[in-house]
Length: 61
Length: 142
Image (cartoon, rainbow over all chains, first blue to last red; front, side):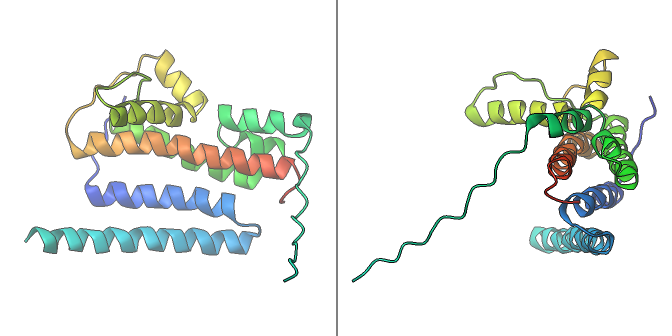
């Protein structure tokens, strides 16, 4: 079985992308709403990734 | 002072089991199959590919599969049982991995840790897909 070594950032972005697709499909009723919500979720994930990353860096000193 | 009574909204009747049991069980066994049976092929393909990729990357990162065992304390037991249920929710992916002997001990390291989360999340996302299949089969949404 192949072995994958992703960095924190790569793994988190991949996670965000796949989770956003499913969240978009399962929570909204029309295709446009699904696309918008999927993109919104992905944006929130990435924003949180950077925000929490910076918070940890600054908090760590 | 006169009391005003607000009538409770009528409860929605549970749809007959034969209308939704097959898509829901199919959705558990193979992610997206429930939607496929309900003729939502585009959504089925997206759900299958997303959940399959999530699970496969979890395996490729050597994530740990939880086993239902009692831990040293209540929290550990909760994590073990909860993690097992989430892993099991991936359906055939979990069963195949178990049958083919995938066994990864809990090891320190960020990649392993991400792998474990990917495996658990694949199951959680499949639960969402099962609920969606139920709602479509029960005509609660399109």
